Length: 221
Length: 210
Image (cartoon, rainbow over all chains, first blue to last red; front, side, top):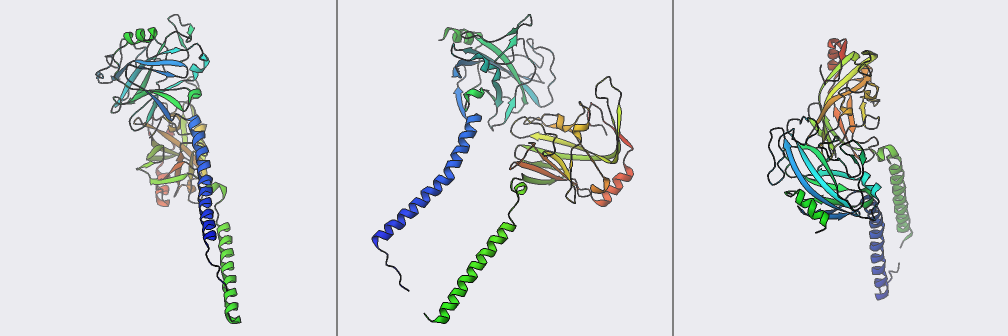
């Protein structure tokens, strides 16, 4: 039996085969992974746009601002640095809410100004949620918690006529979240529009200005 | 190379091929079918303990058996109704903890069932109950805000020993997680429970009351 001699040429070919195999394996594993991740990112919020407290964010063709947030607990404790809104039944509340023991109501008031180019119908599909540091999420409390609309896309005025956002005009809405009392001080609100995924807005808390913030936003400064 | 050594080498090659073919046949025979291949990843536990899946945790606290359920009418103005069975109604008082986001336990065959010792699977009977009962499948749990309620199953009493509750957060839990909770029902325990079970249990909209 004759063993072929290892020549420089065959060694180079051996390396070429090895590198080619490694590249092929990387492509075979990496391509489906990348496609899977791309598909996931297309339909899930994975890229937050951080909005500092008191600032506004550009998202999906609109300006968004968290103008006020507050915490209501069963014990009547309120969060410092935010609007002091009182106990479980606040002056602005619509109806009486009964919080379960160990839970708190986090209220968030937003103002958005849609741009002229924005498709306003998309706003009816927006989702507002809060997230704690561990990544756990809570949805909005279903009912209205104040006289303001409780979603981005539509609401009712004092005469109970339906109103919708208009391009270039501020639209203020207020939502509530029932969350465990031990995380209510850390949750941060987020706004998602399916057409703008994977981007979404994440608002920092400790907003103290309310009307001033709205005026500032309206003037565009 | 002598002819004897050549023969031995060919025999070794043939043996190697034979072993390889046998391994291929064995692997093919033992290849999991599609159902097993796509099965959810189970987390096992027992009654009384919290069993954690990927996105939820389930705790079964207590069980009750009865031959008949006294239920409220479908509407508040409708008369109450009585549901009898040739088998038994198994009522499971359980607590649902959401771990990531708000969720409800789907009342579907793929998400909620009872597997007996001999491998039969019984679907939840919650869908056959009037609306508004304090069923766990009608409640939404959020992280840190658990939900409590009943799960209802109807099955022959002889199938109860060794029964395991299977729950998942999705109707089609392929490759997701599922919790499997051994209800610790032995033959003797089932006999004792059937001898002492109430003729009927009343379920109302105010909560678990037995």
